[in-house]
Image (cartoon, rainbow, N blue to C red; front, side, top):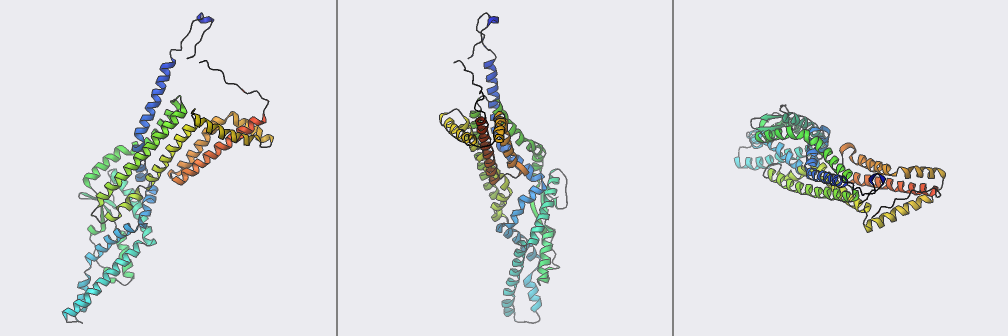
Length: 427
């Protein structure tokens, strides 16, 4: 502890009594910020993903767009539409009626009608599958999901629309446009018997939610939507507050990185459990085989974010160790920075030296600016990905290396200037 003596005090020792309480209060505040941030990271990430996916039409359409490329989803949709058409068109009855006046022998008629009926049903199913794999359906899929997102958002707010509405105890999605397009396609290929087939409303709708779950979702939406929008930025501020308040910043960087990495692993566990629960929910339904495709596609953005968060935590741990006062970190830091500064020292030109002197005097905030630029690039467009993370990290490391090279050039250009010496701190 430092001591102060002087004539004003008559040579007595004056103890800075406020130092310890202030230090303890600051350390406690840093720990509180870190703990709160750690507890809120996973809920904030899930809430932000849900809020962005539900409220942003473009993000929602981009999220569900790849679903139609899944064979399992195409099979489920094809089975639903094919069943709706075949239930309303009795192929065997039509064939029996057509051949009634031509073939009087019932056994021979059955031998003919059976294979023909199977062939026609197979042709219907084949045409339906081809339609769902076509660009035409991809366009319809985009339109249907655009209306569905907008309608679902309004119904969560208490409104009802035509595309998505309450039907008794269920929330249903109207797919009439898809069925009508399939019928047109079948008629164009010669299967004219489906043109006037009446498809009831019950077969034109897909049940999304029952009423009790809708009530729960409305409550969650009303409370969670505004909270989810700001929770993730607040978590970021809490991490920043923990860093700013910490007296030993390298150690705090390591702690922040460890907490972030642990939350990434916890989020991965939550996603794994959610996948199983989602599969169990759809088990036994038409979309059961496609449950994995639905889950992986709908949560693709969150899963990419989880991987990036894990890497962020690990890199912060390494960076904190690298910046710390430990033996190995100091050795590595000295070797790297010394090598970069020696490289800068051999750069020719007075302009490089002048620029280097300016960089040396402002290197602290320039390093902060380099890290901030990497964060902006990573988060730009709200489309975090692993590839973008590595590009952002590479850019930050490159800029930090360039700054250190310029620092070396600046110091080499003024070898005779007096350098400030660090004051000796009494033990």
